[in-house]
Length: 288
Image 1 (cartoon, rainbow, N blue to C red):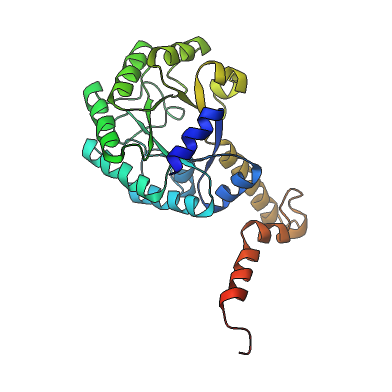
Image 2: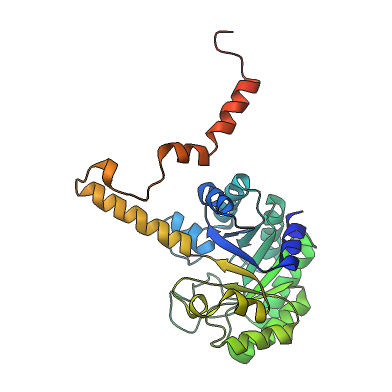
């Protein structure tokens, strides 16, 4: 069970998980040596040409996650936004993701459709505490220990701490403050002390947590999972945009990118050799 594997990894040390959105990025992250993957909702939305505003459906998210799982053997932490409805909807969402082989899911306490807190102004509306804890209880009852259930809060300050305590009591195994939940390292440490369970941090690009949290500091404040949800996406998008610009300007295709992967390396990356071996093993010999 992938959830058990991820629990074992976190028991050994803090786990970093880069944000991926398809099979190719999953393969690249695994080859880079990461031990887990984050199916980033921000990146999956972007891959559909959409902002991270819960415009895609649960099924579209699940399809992307399945492609990630098929391409990699690493445990996957999936973003299920608000659960795509009320507690009953959230329970079904969690079951579908568990059935797909996900190791962990994180669900937020925002009103649906969610709003990305680093892309919009304050405040981000959250649902009542009663409704939020009901959704967590429903998810936990639906999946048992097949998934690590991570409760995200978009509240702030004392309200965030009270919600985090209630979410743990409702069955959350970890708590995920967002970048705007707390403003100091001390508040993060206080949250961990108060809730008594590990925290998950999202080191989103261009936020204070990406800048200030070193690996040592993350461990000190109780973080066991650290997501890198947008770094790969932003780097890849910048490289693609520059390549397209240079091609459109008339530069010779062979000279547009010194950082481009050589063709033969790309062929190896996506597994052509494995397919050829399978063909030789199972298909009739040529001319037979």
